[in-house]
Length: 422
Image 1 (cartoon, rainbow, N blue to C red):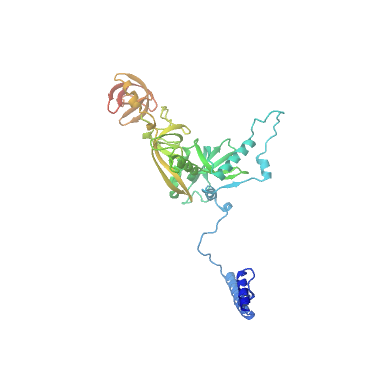
Image 2 (spheres, rainbow, N blue to C red):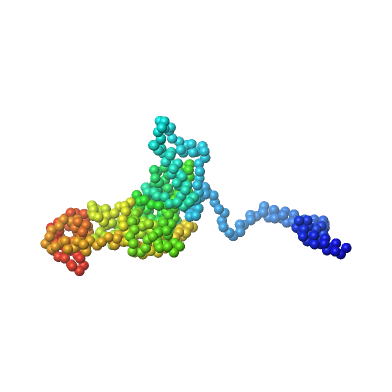
């Protein structure tokens, strides 16, 4: 009998969890009277708790505030949510809405011929698919800045805490969709330090970018309404890291000292901003030309080879490269910080043409600068001739005026030419 008991115990151990023994159930069971006594206090506690809830509101404990729905947010907050990095939203139109969105007139095509003329509906469908691919795959697209608009704020302009925020409208391809890019993801600045005076400077900076071709990544697109929000900082960061950093031990595509063809995206009086293969570089006027330049713009009728326009192309020599991790509106970006020079990307004309100009010769030129030290005259975009101010009684020259210059002397060491106005 002892052996049989051992065998039975072994079987029970092997089958434990499949057919649990009855003796375990007996151990777990509790007397009915005790169970009732335990349940009664719980019911009384619930009644007391219900009375407390009705009489006084329960305070919310510490923690994150309750999230608001996007349709309950202000437009500025909703846009900020739409353009957050590592998120995207694609709102597809219903079948009924698609009929209206892609409606077009019937085009008759003869047998054997193909429809070669594209309609707005076909353009819109193609562009929609490209925008969706950008949103879902971080594909970089291109567009042109056409206008700057202010984002509606929940605060009134008279409110002391009111700070205006701006957004660029970007034309994508045929213009079926307009991409909206807020200033803080159009280019990098210290967004957390924003104040009203800084906002006005940002608006001026954005105005200088009108007509510029930029890259962007889509963060939100609505097929029915055509609403699109984009992010340029993400596109800039991806291109910059790809071209200026070493990936898997490979040599970077661009190193210090090399030349890069850059796109001009902003022109001011004292600087030019370029997009050099993913690095946004502000080039000061001193690094624009070997010759004297008073204004980088085509300004006051001064037309020389050193005047630039938004949308143009220019070669830039990279002088330094560094990467920076920045935070903008709850998103992090790795951007390339670089310095560059336009004048160092080409030969110094003083070294090449200095010997062509001799004392006593007369030359035609254009006045490009009037300073305390003299009048700068550009001689056929080859050399600058520094002339004395006219003597008393003579009319003062003006910027952009065509004049005749007589060469008086030359400085062989500094490669300067001095003359007088005729």
